[in-house]
Length: 126
Length: 258
Image (cartoon, rainbow over all chains, first blue to last red):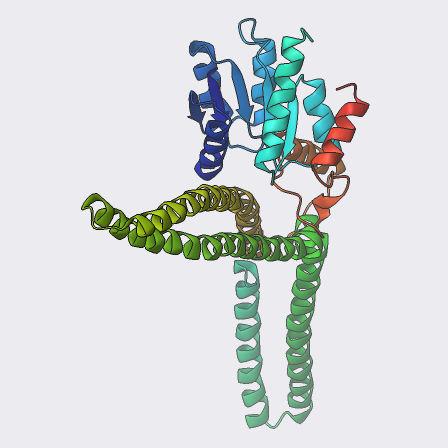
């Protein structure tokens, strides 16, 4: 399982990377915003994308839309991990096809739960 | 606010006053009292009118400056909502960093004595173990050592797990850097905005500024929302209609068929 972590704060990328390692996911890469993440996704055989929303250049919501619009990437599960808390924004992310939405600050348990749920659905063919 | 036109006019008035003063002297020397009195009166009137003009100009400048202040919607928006917002944001940064520091310190304070005790207990046992290896222990002493070793291993198991938990807590506490960083960046943008507006105000003071453009404000809001607005800070203008936590997000998503 190859996972791309996208966040403009390196501290948050390290936190997520450590939590993923605890959950048994050791193959992770990092990008600091949507515009650097997208080419990595297009060339990198990633299985899963975890992204922040509020980032310079290309925000996470635009990255999500770009992934869904890309024939090669459109089925990739995407988990938003963000401090963006407006209902309107969560609805927008859902409509854009997000697979999970975690609000910062979050706990290790929440991350585990949401990731498990995403893969349960995928394995169930949903 | 002096303009070349005003300066020219002032010079012209001065020249006329000088001319009249010279006439006045010659009238007095010639004993023409009637003409002298008329000139004195006229000079007084002129002086008053210059004063009134100056006063009028000052009043107009003041009025226009006040209008410029009142009309600049961006400045009133800044002072009425965004600067109080910024204060809330910075207070939020202070409380987030304080919480993170306390969480980290709590975990460290709980872990330090555990690791100290594990280390000193391991030292004791190692010395006994050395004596056992050197065949210096009696059967009774060995039985005691064996019991102590068993206890110690159980304790290492428990304490190591507790220390691991504390370290993950330290790890999670570092999320403050991301959250406060996003908040501080917004305040920095605000400060730049205030700076630009003040510079602009100084430059164009007196000129009329445009009235607020509703559509522009809405576009800016939509653009902000797309870029992401950072954490919702309690007590600020952007804090309306936000979810209160993960449970709220889950409820909202499940209502959308997730």
